[in-house]
Length: 112
Length: 111
Image (cartoon, rainbow over all chains, first blue to last red; front, side, top):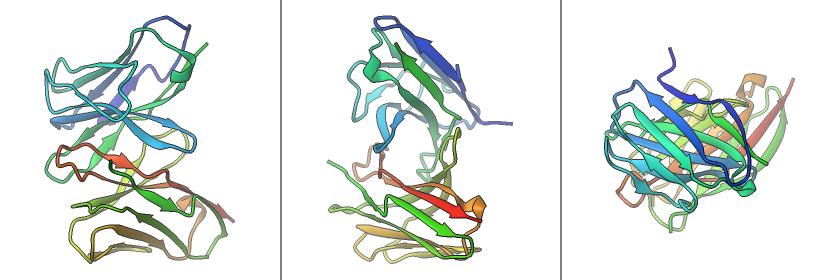
């Protein structure tokens, strides 16, 4: 069964609304990541975490918050969603020993 | 700032042709990783390169890491339609598990 799951898979939000994207992993990896993917940009790192209670800013953290309440769960929070945050969001867990990452299936977010 | 450049950005080839994707940086990376992504799924790890000058062969795929750890190539022989997708290189040269991805090489294989 899938080791990294994301919910919801699709989300339509209104400008100014709050959006929470959830990620769960069963790999028992300490590291977890949130990326967004836009055409022409590859994947860009928003926030990451070294373990429960830890959140770190990635390369494009503005407008996003993250929460890591447990080893398994890592959430991405958009307090005031804007149309520029329309994108596909990927969560990943990372093996600290090898550096390899394991991705979820993605969440397609549209902010109207 | 970490940055990885990939080329070509797009490639369309006939089934049976060979394919090479390249990844380069102005800074050194301790390791480099190649991933492949197909539509509506997350990227999947293909290969990890950890040694200067390393060459890894897996069936039709050969990955190389430059001696200076600033570039890498991914070669696929006799491409098949199932090889289509976006190929990304990624790495972290901060030591903080903070990874940067290249923009990707989008491969189309025509049957």
